[in-house]
Image 1 (cartoon, rainbow, N blue to C red):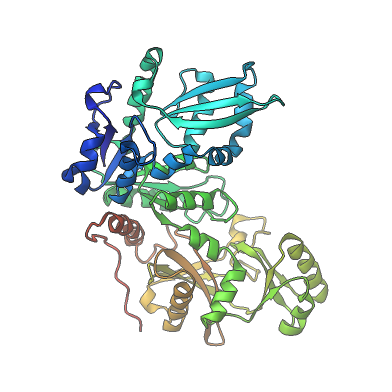
Image 2 (cartoon, one colour):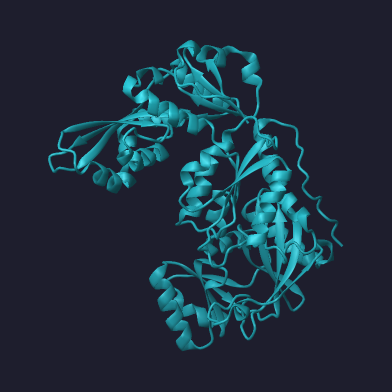
Length: 503
């Protein structure tokens, strides 16, 4: 990826930095050659970012050209609003108070240079501020209130020409480290064109991809022209450094996975899983409503609340399946066999959520999982029930072997057409034709019934890839690559697998 530092007067540039082009803001705004460039990262170090100034237009037009720019036009406008600065800094209160507790003065001006401060004891505060207000050079103003508490009153970008002489040595070192990061390197030996972040969490006990699959994703992505970085739950501030995000951790609306997806989308990255997919697929109430409206074949379903809970047994009989709206991987899903169990389970579920789902019980030896990528079937698996259990996962088992059932992966074209068609209909109704999904379908008395749509389906080495091998990973990475190139206006070059013909 080509890197460009934009300044008002290149001859005044005093921070050194090798391997990065330095151009004037006038050239960037008016040179048609620069405007036509693709796969460019712009670092805007203008003297002024006032509204409709050159500095403002550099960031605005960079975004219009499909260039990745720091700071973004949105960040520039955010920095000008004291109310927005106050809102965005709320989560930093603990680090602000702990960092400045020893200060006795009324006001404190604080400089952030490429995420650092020249005094190392303030590095955490500098890093946290940079994560929220992403601009290379910033100056924050803190004021101590009458109660003795420090408040952030303003954050402003500062010109590199305003850096005090005694700070220059430190800032040059920070700048060299900042621009020399491998992910920004324009002269890569492997000639990578794009940057891919893979989000994983070693603490995720039911990770959607095992270690070997994660290695495969990385290897295939590198073969396809990506530089790959592995991110963890605390790395959300690094999202803007990449072109695509692949989430390989169980997703939830109320945790960091959704925030990662939302941040990535706002930065213009290609994302699997997209935030709207996480929002929709994680909620069984939403799924039930949409599938009924779209006439997707599904088990009889009822949305439960405190006023209609007495109707469940009459409508479904016993046993009946009960689900929390955000249940995943069989967690939050229970079977009520008796009236007493039904009441106890409903008490527990409705204590946690205002709404829940009741679904007719359909016993089967296995569930189908149909993988759907960009509106086309990708893989087909049979997931067998855990030994002696009615679900695929039995989290109550004391042994790893007893927690999961067996599997059988077959070519999609050999799966029953009615199963694949039901899966496709569900995905298209709920989220459309972009993204990766896994649809659980039961075959009961010769008919398909969609149980749920998962936006973060398993891709495990030795399971879902048994039939397609490396082509499975190639198709998923190819989808991200296509999305990037569509955003950049590049002719499609993806190697995604063609949809197999249905019998």
